[in-house]
Length: 562
Image (cartoon, rainbow, N blue to C red):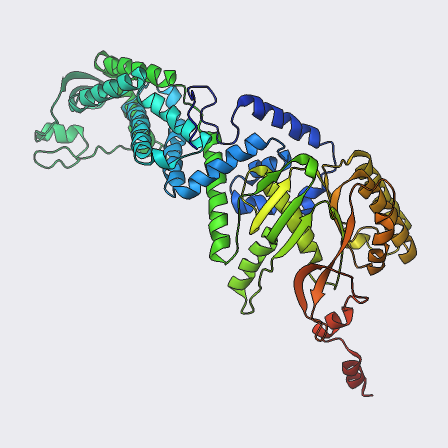
């Protein structure tokens, strides 16, 4: 349903927040979240994800990701805008063109042109104002043709703002005065007659304007004129370009022309003052419109354009992206079908462009609900566990940013924060100091995590003996299940899955735990990258990895001649 409300407010052109109050609150929220562990930015590769959407301003998009918006009104505000951009394909490029013109006018220092000191600056000012008039005309025409197709509050508010400027008395006066100014210049000075005084050696010693005309100078110069102009050739009925002798090599022709331009403008002050007064009046009307800084809108358009392009790219590859639906926070749920990892998707595209062998993106389902909110994910090495865990986090991030998610369908509750624990490869293995570091990290997590949080763990607690890894992991899982956290632990320690019944039997458990496995072709050991509920196999199929790289006892025997 189209939003009909009083749209004449100062916050009319922001496409990310429906009000200044909500924007300020979320800005404070983001600052507060910086006190929590920031590992999820690296572990979920959010900078790379942001570059897929906003390649030139990815840091702004990362800021939106780390905002972890918890305001459903803001999220739906953005999703509605995204729907409009998808429903009306010409919307984003049209508005982007308008903003680019305005940004370029600002780069030309349009606000410093109220006192031009040369005809060049005067022309720049007129061109900039002309561009602004063109912008409002294009926006008005586009809105008239497409207004019935636009349903979001944000897009309608933006166009209503432009419409208010288009119908404003100041803008109407701006157009009138701009037309008058252009007409005055069109009929203005076309030529001037300059008198040059010479000394006895015929060296110019002074000069001045003695006459100005509304017609171009077309008379053929006399022999004396040719001497004055250092022998420059003048064809009949026209004046050729003036050439200057350079007294210093660093002086450029453009600089000489600009100097001449400024001098002539000043010399003709008794005529040009009226143009200065007119452009000054036009500028005052322009400033009254209050539409000065378009840089933020420029980024916001890039954000939505990038989001649309990403959706279209996924669909062209046979994958879905959908608008998420939101469940109450109290349900602490996330039900996603056809889920895949956007980072792996982008890597596959690059791989497939460069290699003959094709990589395929496999989709999976996951349900965090009353039946199970915590999972232990086990399975074959290189079977896609890390990719699946990352996909869950990215989907949550995109949903709370107000974007489509890489799923066929998605319903989830908002999370207050995403905790991740992805130990680096060099931290694995038995090492007391590394184990102590892991425990300290989990201490920070357990002290601040809440039932509304999402916890993603990838090969955690593996830097001590196998028995201690199992014992510590079990205790941590019990703690997080008592708190009621949504989460998943990807691990190659299959024995942990055998402890699920014991953990679920603990009193005061608020999140049930279940087992997920990565499927493998048992005959060949080929990874199928499908995630299913089930009991883990007692092997990680590591031998198949050795065979894949050609490491086996038979080849070694042949090399040794045995």
